[in-house]
Image (tube, rainbow, N blue to C red):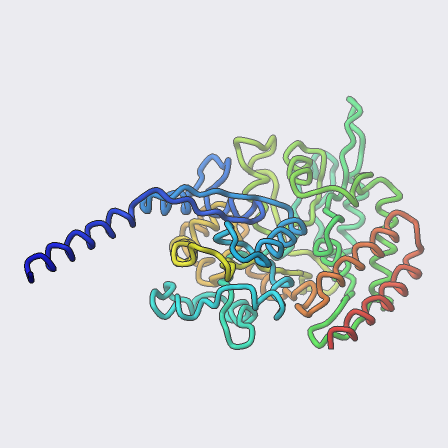
Length: 421
């Protein structure tokens, strides 16, 4: 009898081992930038971190990539179901509010059983922001701190110096705007005004703050009005593209790669994609710097960050967590940075591979030093970003004066904040 029991145990153990290696599919919902960070995308020297993990574990990765709004809308719908096929999701810090956190898997038990390598090495501020009601509900993966990218070749052609102050930048963007002999328009400044972050980056250089960490609204400040006025003037003068309020990230990248834009507002990490020798007409010629202000030695830098989270109704939580562990390790963080990711481990900027590969590492460290979150997380943070976009775009397009837009934004944002308290 004992022999039969032992034999049965051996067979069950063997079956379990085989089962663990059977092909599985892990569905990941994210923005395309997260897929590129984890796999290298179409970069010539891609670091396929997630792909290597998948091969070792006999897993097929099913990436569902969406823009920021549709991504979170889809995720919320999935998490409201009894069960979801989404196993892993990238979530933006402003979306991780208490009501959403209750739909995410608490990661504490997973981390105790199978710790993330040097978890404390991840930026403390980011880690603290992912703890909701005492539970770790997400692991920071990517920070997107905005900066100023510029095409050195085009500036030289136009005889324009690299700006060191905000006033110099505004003058340079105007001087660098022109039409080529073939009719191609080259825009002095390119940005994505279909989101709030890059617009707030521009406005913060004037000293404007939308909503501070204590949930005080400052939308109707002189600094905000001054920034909106300048943004509207740049649009009216043709320094900004005519479709700037609908221009998305992919089009911004293409515009800069093709030499149709001189300056661009985007995260530091976009340097890699803009200089990709396989896709850019100006590889190695598009540099990046902290966004200048008129205060000597002070940069303006808005930041947001993304984390990996597991839906509480997922059926493959352990497998999803194992991929989080892989992507969050010290070496993986450096390799993802080589793919253009914003590393959430400060020590990564000291790694020789990053110093050698990413010339913007020192500049980004300055940007991080002066960075602030674009909009703090609160129950109606998403609505607050939406009303900001509406009023900002109305000012840019001339549908409202900057003063009217700022006053309306102040009233609407105050109502949202009050409702959340």
